[in-house]
Image (cartoon, rainbow, N blue to C red):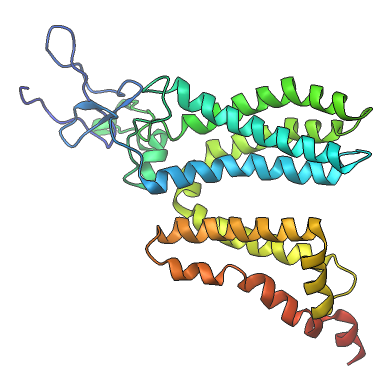
Length: 297
């Protein structure tokens, strides 16, 4: 490989032509990124644990939203119908994820070849097109984190396709006209998730463990706050004896644990002992924050 002149900017590179020469500086083809010598090299790294955890978080978002809206707006006449929709939502996201993995290299497998992110700027190559000698801008926009950016869009597209083709049959089969609103909600939140990912994918990648931990604490507190009786025994008893409350509480704990593991990378597992802490803190202190007591004082 003969030496060639380095390209300007962070992401401009040269690709090797059929005759063995090198192209002018520009954007690398899809599935490639430039190295320190300005050569476009294929993305052949294995995803790190953090990469898989990031993808897991992006998959959890639509799944949790599906379950939330099914539970909130599904008009079903029995628990079996709502349970069937929960299972269907899980299958939609699962098969959407599997389909996205199968169509990306190496095709037909559950593995991925990636270009691991090295800096926040890798997610926003559009903002780093160089302007040599302050003249014409050299456009080198590319997916430097291939395929961590596009795979999320593929997962959402396949999952939404599953939702609009499979869920109506499940809804119709269980009861007359239940759960239509949950499908409509999916038609709204998927485009919103795509928009958020398109704009803030890099920021989410760098901060998703903190996002998980903060949101799980907030939603746990909001779950307890809607209870009429805010005494510690009542909150504790309702969390244990009520099946729905117990499932919601365990779900919060699992998500909270996922955030802690994503943050520590299995290095400080003793932090998992803090998973019940937000719920226990709310239960033990709720009686001291009763607005009626504050008003009376």
